[in-house]
Image 1 (spheres, rainbow, N blue to C red):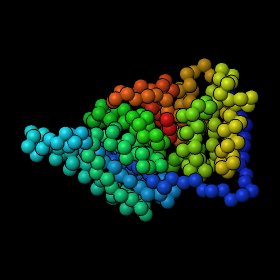
Image 2: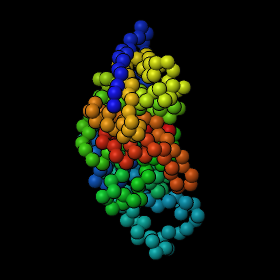
Image 3: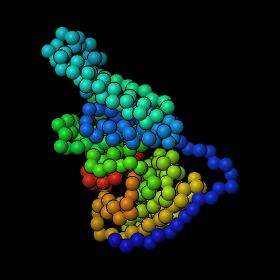
Image 4: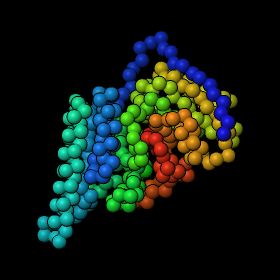
Length: 296
């Protein structure tokens, strides 16, 4: 893989309007990765002076209640009570973490719904959603295996996905942007600006630009670099030729650069509860080694 690099620094002669996140939503559940996910969301909320919402879904579809079923008379009443108690216990952990880290503004939400649909609805009223990559070694992983992509495709909000493997004390100091000129990538970059502004340096990666010259112009990556520079973001453009598929090339570059966050567009569509993803999106979500901020 060969790369050409170009550095752009942002300077401004006027007072820039500060772009920030005002509401951070984090998925709260009983998984072993919940604590790390909540801590990351809390740290972002503290940095951005944002309101933090911890949402725990009971796992009981809201449509059950809309159908007018008297659940107290059903054989599953005891199981439903267990679901609610488990969600409340998860929210107690959220409260404890938010308090211990000094989050100034936060709230818990107990949502009567399935995880995917419930979180997607709550996400529409947040600036950023924090979830975890499904861990297939956990008992409930098959239930939540499509959670990140479902929320991304059905909420029109940026989703920050935290890998289940690894420890991530700081996120966004060395971000890597996967740039292909698409609408999805454009949304991802715009949605990531609050975090990009706090980065030490941002790398914009353009893979095999000669094959997609209609999307990049005469100097691939230059326009998006200038856009970011006007936000006072220090940007380095890397134009890379590779024979690898884009997903694996992106992950390889992220490892080489010691990237602590990937910013990229999410490709796919959702019909009913079926989610069909593009190849790059699927590769990254399955094999990520650093947090990924993804927008559709």
